[in-house]
Length: 209
Image (tube, rainbow, N blue to C red; front, side, top):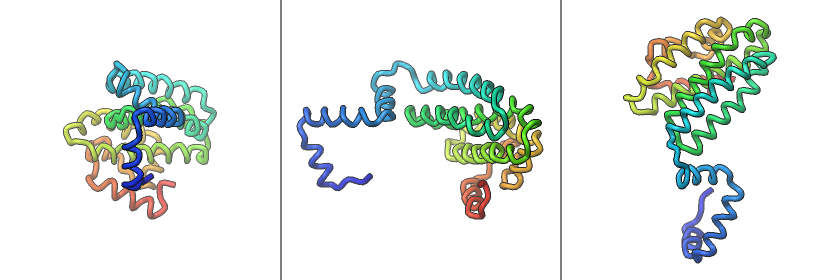
């Protein structure tokens, strides 16, 4: 939402008492803002502290949901809640590093424990989950290319693991190839510099859907 210069000026000239009332009223309607301010103003834990806690939770939760999911399509549906927790952490704490590391951890853990689901799910049930994995992988690779080069090497081992997990599951590998994802980018740690444009071109051509 854009505000006119006149509106901004009028708000700035409100009395401190009026500003305080407006702030409290706005905070009651915006839980994300409340959480963000709590983290910045009161929380005695760092971004790293919160990330470490979430790493343990993501690992445990990903194992749990693959254990009780009825099919790969069902797994995809319930994974959105775990994905949402990662997104909330990133939104509140502005953790760009965690946005990459936690998503790779989630994908790796899901794939490590979903082998039985691949065996009992039909090809149709597997498609949506496989597409989700490939879409999430693309997004993560794009995020890495936007980070400082010195940080890229910190994701090499987990990306190699992800590439191998994709490559070792035939139906998932098939979806990767159909949608232009080369697992060598992951296993050999050679992410194309133009992967963002590559991804946009694929979507424009109707892929990744």
